[in-house]
Length: 313
Picture 1 (cartoon, rainbow, N blue to C red):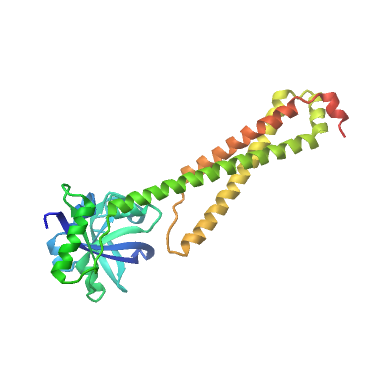
Picture 2 (picture 1 turned 180 degrees about the horizontal axis):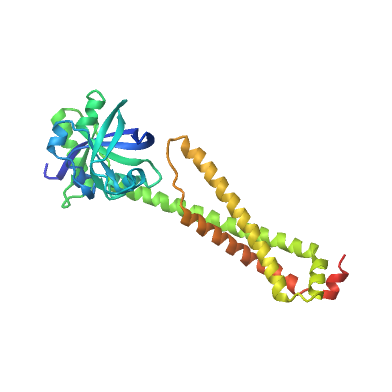
C-alpha cells in the first residue's frame, strides 16, 4: 500500500542474557533489516541486520552503547559474544552492531528504568520458539499521510485480503508516546507538589526542634555569652546543628528510599541505577533547607541578653 514506507514483523520476549557468567534481564525484540527505519534505531558501531542474517536465522544481535559500556567495558563491542536465553534455549550470539543509547522509539516510550533492549533477527527468534508466528507488524507511515487515517486504511486492506473483519487492531506509537509523556508530566507535577509540602513541613519541624533547643539551653547560651562568645559564634553553632539534623535525615531517607525501591523493582526483575550526582544534590539541598529554617532560632539565641539568660532556670 502507498501509505507505508517500511514494514516488518515484530516479536517480543522478556528474558535474560549471560555475559561472563553474569545474568541480566533484557527485553528481546525480533526484527528484520527494516528495523532501523521503522523503530528509528541509530547505528553507533558495526552494521544492521541484512537479508542474509534474516534468511539464514543467524545468531547475531544489536545492543546499545550503554549496555555495551556496562557489560563489556567499552562502547565498541562489535564481535563480542554473549549468551541469550530465547524461547528457553540459551545460545551464543555475536554482536554485529552497537546502537546509540535510547535511540529506538520503543525504548524512548518505555523510559530508562527498564531492562535493556536487545535485537535479533525475527526468524531466529521464531526458530527458538518452535516456529511461533509473529502477531504484530510494525510499519512506518509515509509522511504525506496522517497516522490514524493510514492505520485505518491498512487494517481494511489486511481484513479484505484475509477475509476476517474486526480481527486486527492498529496502535499509533507516536500517540501512545504523547499520552505517556502527558501522564509522566502529571505525575511529576503531583510528586513535585507533594515534595514541596513535605519540605515545608520538614523545615518547620526543624525550626520547632531548634526553638525548643534554644529554650532548653538558654542558661548555657548565657554562660557562653558571658565568657565572651559573640553573636556570630552562637548563630554558627545553631546553624551547624540545624544543618547536621537535616544531613542525618537526608542520609536516612536516601538509604530507606533505595532499600524500598530495590525490594519493589526486584520483584519485577528490574534494575535501579544509583545516581551519585543526584544523591549529592539531594544532600546539599537538604542541608540548605536546614540552614534556612534554622536561621530564626539561631538569631533568637544570639539576641538573648546574657544576664536574663543566666537567670533562666
